[in-house]
Image 1 (cartoon, one colour):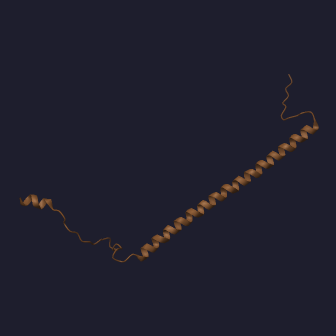
Image 2 (cartoon, one colour; image 1 turned 90 degrees about the horizontal axis):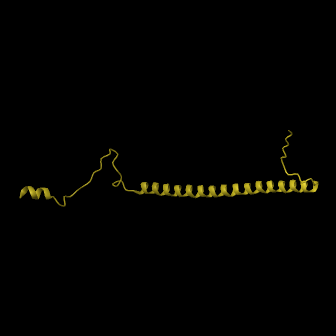
Image 3 (cartoon, helix red, strand yellow; image 1 turned 135 degrees about the horizontal axis):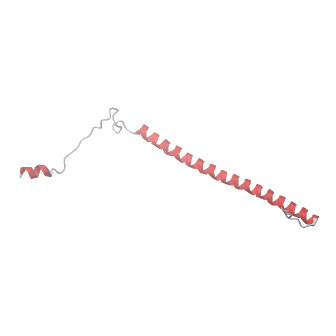
Length: 100
């Protein structure tokens, strides 16, 4: 038994074979160029988004640092971890019930 593997397109006409080679080469070239353009476009979009997000984070951190610098010393917590304050009892029902 004799096996033959025909890999490829052979029209038997040399002009048709050259035409297939030229069209195939052009298709591969166009695919490479379009792939490169798509890569550049997507890379540019990612770079712009990263710059916008980085700028926004920088702006927010700048505002937080400014608020911390401007805040008066009375509003800042004490370094010992104790927060001082005043309170007033508004309603003390337990004392009313015990005295009755």
